[in-house]
Image 1 (cartoon, rainbow, N blue to C red):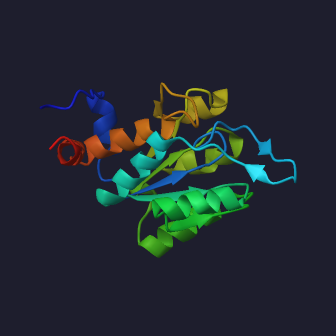
Image 2: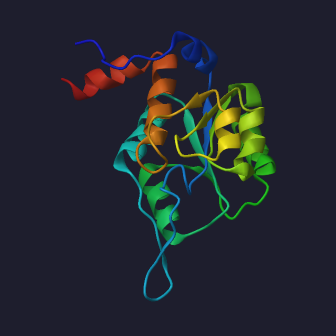
Amino acid sequence: MAPALQIDPALLLRAQGLRVVFFDVDGVLTDGGLYFGASGETLKRFNTLDGQGLTLLQKAGITPAVITGRDSAPLRLRLQALGVQHAAFGVEDKRPAAEQILTTLGLTWSQAAAMGDDWPDLPLLRRSAFACAPANAQIEVRHAAHFVTRACGGDGAARELCDLLLVAAGRYAALLADFDA
């Protein structure tokens, strides 16, 4: 059975050859809300669609990397469960952190995509070959993006980007077939 997903061919061309994707957390992998428990601990809500997308990227040979301005135990646990090996926590200036990950992976900005929702993400979005923003991202970020998802951050937006990248890499249909057997 053929995949139902349809993507603009111009976006697919722009997304070809990407090998790493930088994700922000709050407002991208979460809804951006900050939840605090009675003892002051931070709670985060992650969408399983997004998690599956990051897992599929790894199966396709595309490295998901997280660069976030905050740090929390729930985030570290979630990334560990997903097998995300490249992450920078509590980062104010995200560009140097991204450049360090690129160097570690032996990649360049021309092989990178980035997804963010607010001004601290702009340096990554403007340097990456493919920039993405969730539907509820701040207006300047949406304007800088090549692709704005239909979903909001924390509600499947990251999965939309992952699916687009899988199609561009020619891996979407084969990965889908593994589940459709």
